Every structure is written in structure tokens, then in C-alpha cells.
Image (cartoon, rainbow, N blue to C red; front, top):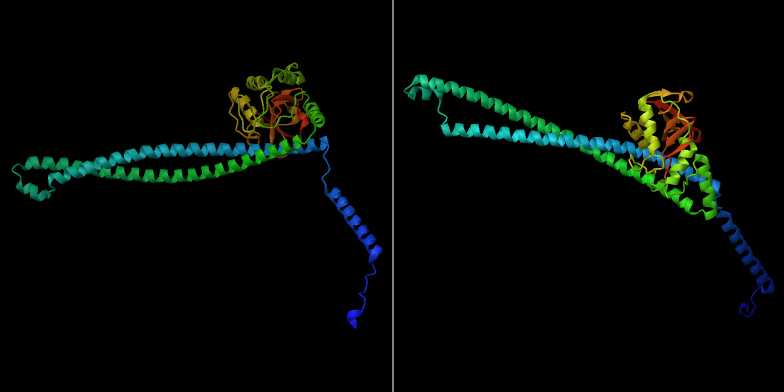
Length: 369
């Protein structure tokens, strides 16, 4: 009987069911549309891009200074390892010479027969001659003992040098690992900045570069891709110098400071390249190091070591030639030239230029020379 019953229809069958299905599909599509648009990242404004790029450049400069520090330590470890290796080679040569001399003595003794001294005295027909030879043999024995001691000393020295060389080689490898890590960090930050800038339209890029030029007061484009830049054209140099480099000079506290400032002025327009110390390109601490080296003063390589290379001075006491440091991590440095201005290597794409010292957060200043 149950087989002949009509199937029970759904309350949403027929037209009502089709209408409900249509509404459900439309609702799902609308929900998907809103969900997709709700999660899409809005296009950043030029100001937002500039803020992100500035932060990336600052982080890249922090990594650059760490790279510079690791490179300095790696260079020192490499030099120490090579000195020890050369000294070990010289000591090894002396050890081999001492061993050869000792071997010659042993061979001569073997050829002489090595008779007991009492027997030799009993058999000799000339006791006086024998005693004379015995005295010579005793002195030869003393020389042999000295030769043995020399071999032992050289052998101990070679072993010590080789152990020290191993230690310096281990340190060198550790510094080289850190060097590669910091290099990757720098390149990663710079690539991220380039990617952000590449998303800008031509109009947005023009606004970005105008904002950069306005901040530096130089009129020089900062839109290079970060690989070291160009910025060496005469127009760039003229623009930099017109922003304060050719103002009436402020008297430097001494001749060396004046020489450092003069050298820095001669570098205007040269490109920023991270890790560079001149003469064709610089990073920030590479420029200040080179400027003071030209004045006969040796500065350490990094910003966080240069800040301790002289006497600290307050912002109100600044004089031409002083090193000015920025950001809480002491990651940027410039050379003060007076009138609230400095010469510095700003960042990738921005050449060495004159800029106001208040464009970045002041962290401290040092007077050297």
C-alpha cells in the first residue's frame, strides 16, 4: 500500500522553491562580493608610502651599520689569522732547521763509534790528546743539548701558534656568517622599499620626490632604486650647494676640523652606497670616517663606535667638524658645517648633500680632532 502513495512534496517545491534558491544564490554572491572587497588592501597614499619607505631606509641603515661592524671585526680576525699563519710558517722553518742540525750531530756520533770514554783512554797512546778530545766532545754534548732545547722550544711555539690560528679562524668564520646575515637584512629592506616605490604612479612618484626634495632642502631626486644611485651630475651638486654649502663659512674650532669639512664639501653629489667608504661613494659613517681621515684623524668604522671617538658636546655647542648622530639606535651620522646644516650621505638614491640637522631626531654629538 505504501508503494502507491504519492511522494510527499517539500514545502519549498515548485515556484516557491525556485524563488528561494535564486534568492539564496544572490545572497551568497553578494556576501562573497562584500567579503572580498572588505579584505582587499586599500591602495596606500603617497604619504603612507613615504612613511613606510622612510622606515625601511632607517632599518636598512641600522643593518648597514651592523654590517660595517661585522666587516670590521672580520677584517681584524682575518689579519690576525694571516699574521699567525705567517709566524707559524717561519717557526716551522726554524724547527726544521733545528731538527736537521740535531740529526747531523746524531749521525756524526754514530759514525764515531761511540766507545766508552774509559776504554778510549785505556787504548790511547797519547793521554793528553785524548783528554783534549774529550773536552771537545763535552762541549759538543753541550751544543747537542742546546739544539734539543731549541727544537723543543720551536715545537711548543708552533703548536701554540697553530692553536691560536684555529681560534682566529673560528672567529673569522663567525664574523663572516654575521656579515652575510646583515647583508641579507640590508638588501631585504632596500628591496622592500623599491617594491613600494614601484607601485606609485608617475604622478604619485613626482609628489614623493617633491616631498623628499623639500625635506632635504636640496631639490635633488631621491627616487633611485637604492643600488647606489647616480646623483653625480653637476646639477645635483649645484642643487646641494645652493641649499647651504656655499653660505658664509662658520669658523671651525681648529685646522683639522676645517680640513674635514673641506673634504666633505668636495664629496657633494657623490652617491650613497651602503658599506662604502669612498672615494667614489659613501654610506653615512663611511663619509665621516673619510673626512676625518683626510684631516689626519683615524675614526672607527660605525656610527655606534664613532660617537665614542671624541668629546661629547651638546646641540647648542655644535661647531663645524663635529659629528652629529641621529635616531635612538645611533644609526645615522653627519658632519656639522655650521648654521644648523650638515653634510651627510642620506640613504640609497640620495647623494651626499647639505641638509638641516633638524630633519632627523637628534641623538648626540661628538667633537674629535
